[in-house]
Length: 267
Ligand code: PTJ
Image (cartoon, rainbow, N blue to C red; front, side, top):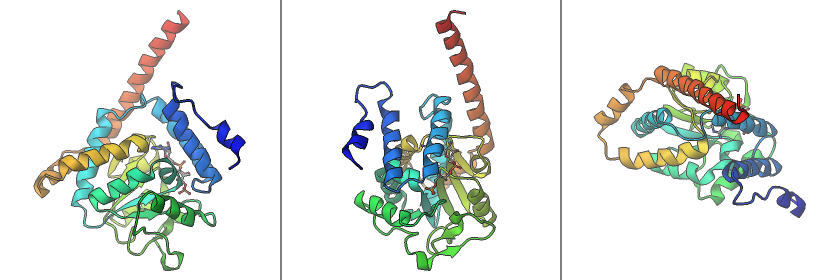
């Protein structure tokens, strides 16, 4: 990247939307460095829009899903965390921390398999401290059934064998294919209406940059729980109800924003 481009994306720390602009910068730089797909910018923008109407914070509904997700990961025999370009660009260190905390390897799994992307994402994760990454050795990869996108290409020791898969920022088809293979799916998706959100076993409607640190914190709490206590958390979790509650939260948030806007407009 040349110095002009660097300057273009420098965000002043006192900017009221510093954090949001900083994550944008990471996605843009990620695209220039081949970490993020071009479409990753559009996906990020869609996510920002949903985050906006969720109040840009991890609400109590998302926290319930996070707790159930952590319980499921701790109970899993072969959990795997799927990594795409956006997550690698936004929060590589948190991915590694969660992977270590719940003993779930990271598997690079891309929708857009542009040449060189896997190697570059591997480097990003390794520079952030990862080891034993899956999804790297192209020659050893296998395919999962009923899926025509590139996400069908999986590691024979990872997603292929996994009982629980954490899929952040997905694109629909794969979650359905994983479900058909009797795997349990945990989705992190700011859009509560996406196909991924609606077909996952546990849907965390939240921004991945906030979800991962929250998950890591909850692992610390739930690690002391017995197997039965963890099972109880999952039994008491109702994904359908949680998504309905999220939609109600969005409706209420927009109603409130409408009132506030009318006040500003003086009507
Ligand atoms: O790196 P690749 O090649 O694997 O491609 C990754 C993308 C994200 C480009 C690919 O999976 C894709 O096109 O995804 P979609 O269909 O755009 O879906 C992404 C979903 O993630 C959308 O529902 C967004 O609202 C949501 N999303 C975007 N940013 C975030 C997010 N959810 C949580 N946290 C975010 N930061």
